[in-house]
Amino acid sequence: MEAEKVLARLLVKTGALQLGEFKLTSGLQSPIYIDLRRLPSYPDAFRTVLALLYTTSLEADHDVVVGVATAGIVWATGLALYSGKPMAYVRSGRKQHGLGRQVEGLVEEKRVLVVDDVATTGGSLAAAVEALRSAGAQPRYALVIVDREQGARERLQAMGVELLRVATLRGILRAAVEEGLVAREDAQKVIDQLYGGEWG
Ligand SMILES: O=P(O)(O)OC[C@H]1O[C@H](OP(=O)(O)OP(=O)(O)O)[C@H](O)[C@@H]1O
Ligand SMILES: O=C(O)c1cc(=O)[nH]c(=O)[nH]1
Image 1 (tube, rainbow, N blue to C red):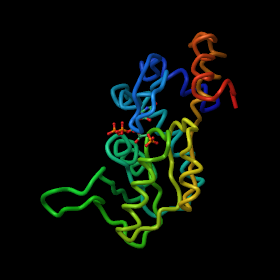
Image 2 (tube, rainbow, N blue to C red):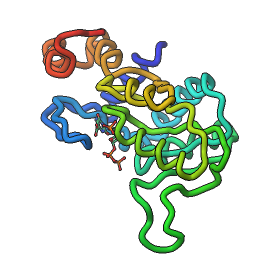
Image 3 (cartoon, helix red, strand yellow):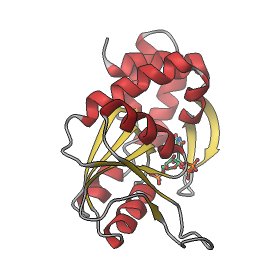
Image 4 (spheres, helix red, strand yellow):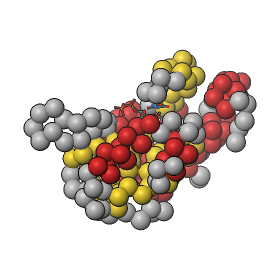
């Protein structure tokens, strides 16, 4: 079964796909929210999505898996255990006590795969890439489970980082409609509001 269909089923079953009115981290408003933080509460779903993430990660040459705080750390940890690669993580800001670091773990001169759960504008991944470069790392690839296609790929490309994704939000919505999991009219409203009616 293709990744979009698997994700559509799991996201609906676990309540991780929510329709409504949401404010995003970028300040944008959205009629849909993907809450992948719920997945680890369902071990079978967690394992299935980790396997999909691992398969996609094979496209990226890397020495270290780096999670983006907070949601990305969970997935990076699972992926590192899956792949046997070292793992590190990036905080959203520099720690104000202890060693005062933003990047935790060994990344200097390493080819890094930056992992997060969702990409929307790419602001969070871009900030992580900058922090990693300041720490002497070489971030080459970013990897997410869901790419909402709201600017992340282009923003990262401009920084020399390629964005890999298990699925796009539009692909998941299309599969959810085909599987009878989301009403076509509800999905169409999301597509109209976020993508000017283009299903991609
Ligand atoms: O591409 P962007 O526009 O940056 O949006 C995506 C980011 O937003 C969410 O994080 P959030 O800020 O909600 O923090 P959390 O991971 O700590 O929950 C998500 O986990 C991504 O990191
Ligand atoms: O852009 C975000 O903040 C965001 C969107 C989304 O669908 N899911 C999420 O966890 N964050």
